[in-house]
Structures are given as C-alpha cells and as structure tokens.
Amino acid sequence: MSLVSVKRLLSTYSPISETYSVDPEKESQGPFARETCDLESAAGSELSDVKSIPNEKKSFKIVDARVVSDAIIGLSDGLTVPFALTAGLSTMEDTKVVIFGGLAELIAGAISMGLGGYLGAKSEENLYQATLKETIAETVAYPSSTAVMISDIFAPYDLPPIIVADLTAHLSRSPNLPSFLMNFHHTLAEPSGSRALTCALTIALGYFVGGFVPLVPYFFVGPHEVYHGLRWSAATMVVALFLFGYGKTCLVSGWRGSQNIRRGVVGGVQMVLVGGLAAGTAMALVKAFQSLASSGSPDDKPNHNG
Image (tube, rainbow, N blue to C red; front, side):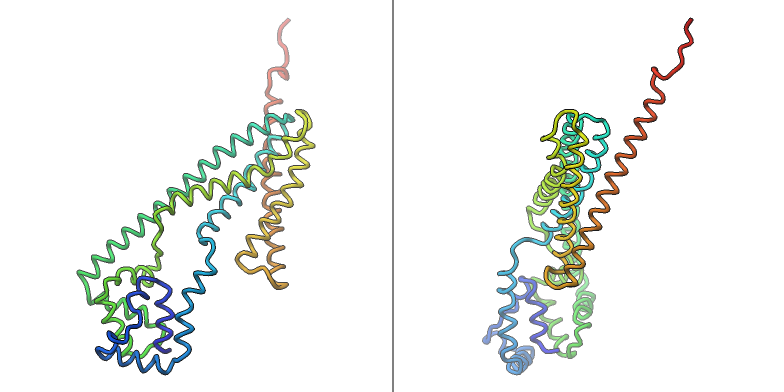
C-alpha cells in the first residue's frame, strides 16, 4: 500500500486532511518529506484522483444518513401501531371513537417517540464528549500508549514500518490527534449541535404522518359505517406498508437490478404481514375484552327478587 492510500484514508476526516495538506516547502524538511515526495511521484495521477474524492462526496451528500434513519424509525412505528389501534377501536362500531382515539394516540405517541429520540441523541452527545475528554487526558498523560494506538490503527493496512513510524511521530505532535483517535480508534463521529432537536422532530413527525394514513378513511364515512372505513383503511395500509417496506429495503440495497427489486418486494411483503398481524391481534383482543365485559354485565345476572 502506498502513501496515497493513507491519504485516501485520512481525507475522510477533515481535521486530519486539512492538517496534512500538501505543502512543498514544509515537506522538504525531514525524512518523512523525502518519503512522501518519492511515493507521490510514483503515484502520479492517482493522487490527483484522491484529492477530488472529498468534492465528489460533498456533491452527492444531500441528506444526513442519520436523519433518514430517524425518519424510517418514526414511519415504521407510525404505520403499524396506530393502524392496529384504529382497527381494534373499529370493533366499538362508532366512527367518532375511532377518530378521537386515533388522534389522541397519534399525539401522545408522537410526543413520546420524539422525547425518546431527543434523549437518545443527548446520550450519544454526552458519550462523545466524555470519550473525547478521556482521550485528550490519555494523550497528555500516556504518550507511549497513544503511539501504540496510532500504530495499531495503521497495522491492518500493511504499511512499511518507516512510514508507520513517521505517521505516528507526526500525529503524536498534531493538535488534531484527539479527533483522529475519536474517528479511527473509538469510531465515534462528532454529533452536531442540533442533532438532538433534529432527531426528536424527525421521529415525531414521521410517526404522526405514518399514523395519520390509516385514520384518513374514517373521516369520509358515516357515524355508524365504521366497518366500511375499516375496509378502506386496511386497503390503504396494505399499499402504504408495501411501499414503505419496498422503499426502506431498496434505500439500503439499491434501486436497480432484479436482485434489489426482489429484495424490495420481500421487504414490502414483510411490512404488510407485520402490520396485518398487529391489526388482527388488536381486533381480536378488543373483541375478547368486549365478550368478557358483556358476560359480566349486570343485565346478564339472574334476578333474585320476588
């Protein structure tokens, strides 16, 4: 592996790549500079291709992957839990009960999911700060163990020992050493300042939007046409669950190719089965509770008077 491959590795993280930008005047000082010049002259056009990688990545990065993950979490729960609840409430044979109960669950569930996402993101931020503080203290108190950690990071890349030694020496003196260790040793990405709020809003909004879909048909039926609304709600959810499962799977595996399409179809069918199972279970439980309540009602008890 050449030094160009090392630059490809380090260019992923801006603090390190900015620190070790190519400067002929600075690199002409010391043995590491001579090694760099020899390897760069042998690499030629490969180095110019590596320098263009960060710009290409920036042009394709539209949405943060963590935001997409949060949206999937919110939609996944929103498409299953409220649908099961509205299906269960449909056995009450009152459209208003379904609508009001569904809206109450949507609001409470969105708040709960949002708070969960906020607390989770805050915990992630606290973990990063605590680990960073510990890393900074360790680099100051134990420089020898820090050098060993740096060498262990480059060990899987089969670099010549002289290059590893030079990289270790330069990184040990770099002010960005804690950031390097956080990225490569602890594999923790620094969370943004608005991460917690963004996570909470994304999950809560995804849950509300996903849960509102099965509730829409009940707004267009009469007060006692709840089963008609249930049929439309079920049909709507079959389509919504399949599209969500298909899109979620293809977002990870890819959209093109027969194999990816087959995986998307399997993912869509799985979401339909999970949603249908949840709805059927809810309806069965409500029916069972109604039967128990009716069997124990005062009207069914024998009259011992007179």
